Every structure is written in structure tokens, then in C-alpha cells.
Length: 391
Image (cartoon, rainbow, N blue to C red):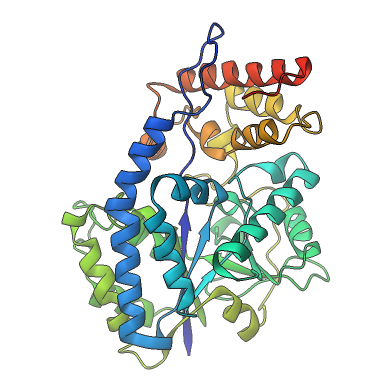
């Protein structure tokens, strides 16, 4: 049998208000903008896609399984702006066919500056998944699939059995991503590697008319899966692919409804969850990653968030506040400022990655994003030093 593991990242950041050094009593977060975007994406993506997923489970029973990683930032906005979206995810969880993974609550870069902060956010996310869905995750997925040998040690020390990251050619060399791997040494952690080509065929190229494989049909995609080498194919994509990145009129929903049926026409293909993968397969080799790997952009590293001087300066100033905030509300605000999207908006990359960085971006330029972020961060720092914890 060849196992197909479909995993979806579910996340929306809390976007910031325009904030200057002269701002007084201005909320840090743009409530109206966040509400408008979340309600729109819920209408176009989350609710119709969850309905399709639930229908597929009803039709296919235990033969169809999927998994999600839902950020705490997303969940908080769900509660405020779209409670029906929360319920639709809970309905999926109730089927027993859906697994929810663990990650940092704030979709943050905490693993890059503090083990303590990283652990705190992961534990907070564990509580969320247990409260919402009654699950205790066995598999971890770091923000934007960021991974290194050191991160694997941290994750294993927290009791996880598996971790998800990018199947990058540089580290795989001649090997296939379609197997389980392990970190170097005596680690028992199992690594699930994203098949980026087959994932991006849906996530990025589905509606691309310049693509030689356009149009991508469910039957064609199932045939590709059936011909893959290896015993495990990990298809990991953003959930907003359905209805938001790829609009309804592209045929993406019809593709989604039909694809699992076409996959299961091959009696040697099966759908599995990440924890089933970890229980079923043994690693075929080591995946040695001494430097940070991610699934972002062409470089697949941290350059999407920390390449230029603005990004690094903002990140370093943010990190300096660790351990200095006692007030619960202000601590929550500081952690919301860690969300990776804020640094992503400051990215100055162009060419292949340019359009990706513009998506969902509320700023006219990376420089506007930097100035606005730093104005808010300086205001937070003033509250920390003055003891004024009203945010």
C-alpha cells in the first residue's frame, strides 16, 4: 500500500492598526479589517470546504482521512467573527477521521529565539486542541514547517512522536520525500516530508493557464499519485487554497469533491493521518538539517522573515521583551506581535516570491510595515517600563 497524507494549515493573522508615535488610545489591532477578512475567507473557504470534507467522510467512511494544524490566532478570530466555522471544524473532529496537529499557538518564530517561549506557546496550543477537539496531538508542525536538528530535539523532548517539514532537495539529495526519515543520532522522532511538487500542483499551479499540465483534473492527479515511488506521499497545503487562493470559478471545489474518489479507485492507495503514518512506518534514513529549513519561498529557509535589516531589527527588538512582561493581557499582545506574518510583510523579495508576499498584505510597502510595527512595539515597551499595562 501507498499512504496518502493530506494536511492543511489553517491560519489568519491579527492585522495591525495604523499606529504612529503620536497615537494615543489607538488599539494595536485593526478589528474592522480583521473581521472583514475573516468573514470573507470563512464564506469563500472555511465553511464550504469543511462542508465538502464532511460530505466526503460521509460518502467514503474510514477510507478518507485528513489532518489540520489550526493556530490559536485563527481560533480566537473564529470565536469572535465566525462561531459557525468553529462548529464546522468540531463536526469534522467528531467523525474520528480528522486529526489536529500541534504547533505554536501564535504561529510565531519563537523557536528561533527562545526555547522557553517556544515551549510555553506549544503547551498553550496543546490546551486549545484538547479543549476544542478532545485530542492530544502526537505530531508537531512548527510555524511554516520550520525545522532543524535542534528543533527536532526540542520537539522530541516534549513527547512528540513525529514532526512535519519540507522535503527539500538540498537535504534529501538523491532521495525521495515519499518515505519517513529521522534526525541524526539516536533520536526516535519520525519526520514526515512534504512532497512540494505534488502539493504545489494544487496550491499554486491549479489555475495557472501557462502550466503544461493545465487543467489539473482529479483523475489526472490521482494517476500521478498512483505512479509515485515510495510508501508515503505527504500533500501539505494552506487551507485557503480552496476558494480563496484558488477561487471557486477555477473548479477547485469540484476537484476536491472528486479527487478522493478517484484516488481510491487504485486499491493500493489509502488515506492516512500523520499519527497513523508514525505508527505504521519506520524511517529509511537520516534527514540531517543543521540550519533552519522551512516551506516558505524558493529558498526554503528563514529569509521570508529575517533576510533584510528591517526584519532583523524588528525581530531582535521584539525578542528583547522576553521575561519582562508580567501583565497577562500585555503578554498576549506581545505574543501576537510574534506572529510570523508581521515579519513577512516587511520582506523585500521580488521575482518568483513577490506575488506571494503581496497576498493578504495590508501595507503599501515593506517599509510601511516595518515603521508601523516598530511604532507599536515601542508603545508596548513604554508600557512595560512604566508599569502601565493597559493595551
